[in-house]
Length: 444
Image 1 (spheres, rainbow, N blue to C red):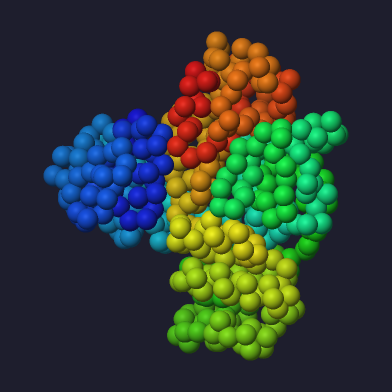
Image 2 (image 1 turned 30 degrees about the horizontal axis):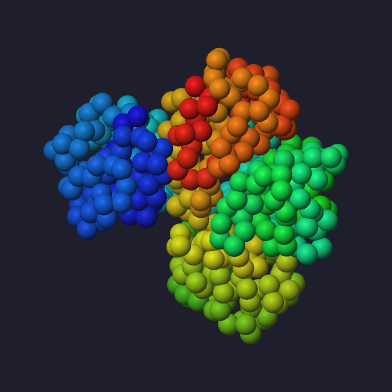
């Protein structure tokens, strides 16, 4: 598939890296030669220096006839204009990153589609959605729904009181259970586990299960599901504003921000929230704001380091659920090893959403890629493909992948070694980054 990406910032670079690993035909356009040189030297793609809003540049970059044009520069107006130009030059589908939620309103969709922007990504909206999920399912680190919720993938950090700690996966096979261990995150490394792997304290374990069996994992992981009602937010960012608008009266929000002018704007944008003009990095200010009575704390400041450290402080002050926005990709693995709860990253969320848009063209595959170093794919097994030639245990599959579940006749089910995958099954595969294109060959 031929894909042109306008913008080599962090979102564009992350997308280009993922797509090039999947052996797609990628061209990145930007006016910054240094960023393009870095991409050109490290990844299997083409780069073109020039303005993303130039007809000449986009023609020379091969936009005519491309399958997908993605505009992810820091400026939403430039992104929309670039999409309009690309569409006029023959791009089949265009996607623009935006900063204004009004642009996503269904009432306005026809207007943007008419001018050439087929779809739009609003990272703050995706981050707010992820945050609401984290508040609702507050015992997990990650929560992904596949195929309209027929299968649920949850990532849970095991505590020392978890009954699963110390158990080898082969021992789970003789127990009556309704989940599959798809992957383990341990000491900054994601492991695709085998039967002899043992679950350890502080592992982040990814379980595949069905919706009606999710609750059984709570006790097994040493967790408790709590009702979140009172929430303190540090930072009056666009994510905070969108979160208040989307959550309605489900939560009672307090927002702390050090900027007085921003607090005045927040009081207008978030009329139901309690706005506090104070520095949440100050423990005394947190105590005065009632941190000890909060069910959850969300850190949405501009600095990833500040968000991580403030969540640690909130934990020490007794808050059970903390959520941190960590935009530095290199910090995510370190942050996951700390006791700060759920991590939100707009780049990963935006990349995941764009991948799903990309694969809407191919109804056989859809992905959820909001993990830093792993991929979850839903792939249709074709007639005569290797994956359908026997029981899963006899297929000699790579150790870098695991089959976690499948959808058959619209119903989700878990996969064991004795399962025989049938043509037409939608199979959920968990694999390490960069290997999905090899896995897909098994299904063709």
